[in-house]
Amino acid sequence: MRRVLITGGADGIGLAMARAFAAAGHAIWVTDVNDAALAACPEGWRADRVDVSDADAMAALFARIDDTWRGLDVVCANAGIAGPTAPVEDVTWDAWRACVDVTLGGAFLTAKHAAAMMRAQGRGSIVFTSSTAGQHGFPNRAPYAAAKWGVIGLMKTVAMELGPFGIRANAITPGAVEGPRMDGVIAREAAAKGMSPAAVRAGYTMGTSLRCFVRAEDVAALAVFLGSEAGARISGQVIAVDGHTENSDPKP
Image 1 (cartoon, rainbow, N blue to C red):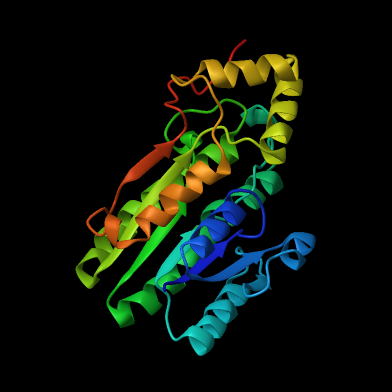
Image 2: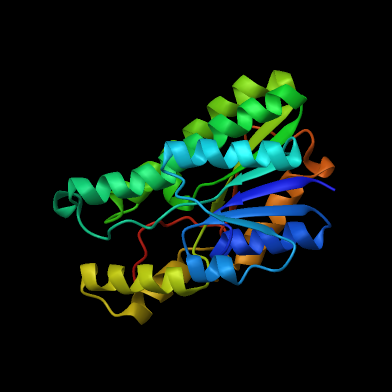
């Protein structure tokens, strides 16, 4: 049984990850800022309300984990926010900082504390959630794309630093994932581009070779693999779960 922490783990992709790790027989600890989602977590999971961009709160979280579990085997640095959908000249500094602080800053704080704990035990796997927006330019999503590119750079550095200590780091880049969050992104993008939501949605699927959105469960399955012994020699990699995205600027 592995001890698994998932940030942003009470909803969306993070919840799918938590369920998949739990189904594999592992102990689950999730953090989130969605109180209703945290309250709905299954009995037996540990669930904390933690803002991943709050350095003091993150230090306290890992202290509790160390007191309770005396270590961590897998950490999924998954928490992030979509940020604004607008041309770069219309993005406010506050909106930029809010997105980058949570999406990249939260990943940094998660990796920082996980690294200290895992280095002491000589093993571990850190799985970062990036995005196809972290591999391509993504019009009207400057803060999100920049943060997700940053997550990949962070992962590559962490993999190099921690590999000699038996610790692996990888990043998953989901494409368009079915669910309420993507519905919101599509609605905002449609408004920004003067298109219908249906046309934007069709553009996303036409930008993939499989002509489909992906499911949160598809992303979760890869996270479980990367945290397992089956992935023991995989590190420093960026692995897409996106139906093979070639076009990051969907058009009807």
